[in-house]
Amino acid sequence: MKIYESGENYLETILILQREMGAVRSIDVANELNFSKPSISRAMGILKNAGYISIDEHGNIHLSDDGRRIAEEIYERHQLIARFFVEALGVAEDVALQDSCRIEHVISAESFSRIKEWLDKQ
Image (cartoon, rainbow, N blue to C red; front, side, top):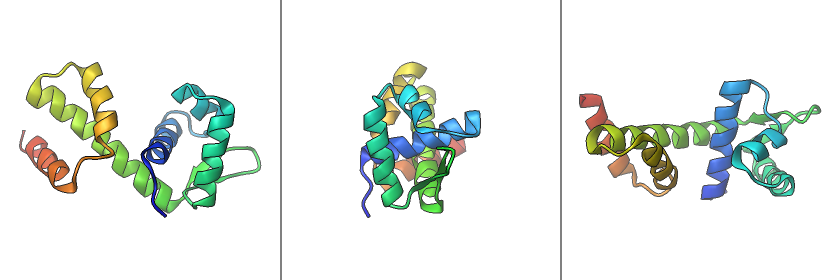
């Protein structure tokens, strides 16, 4: 099943919150993204039906192997693109983070690979 940019953002947010807090519930995702609870509930249902997450009896969200793989790929893109903008181009960190959040979903594998190679050489 194809996952869209919004789904990637939700998975990335779940991953980040799990690293920060341990257990993550829908309300945590809603608060982090500043979205309504119904919107997050609908999105979590879609991700659950697609097999990217599971939700336990306490309402805690868990990434499946596929969900974790996607979240980690997107998070890596986010971090490395932002780092490239700051280190190579001198972009302010807050701007670099905002821009990388949008670019991480559309950048080609080739361009991302070249950015990663450039950063590895620094």
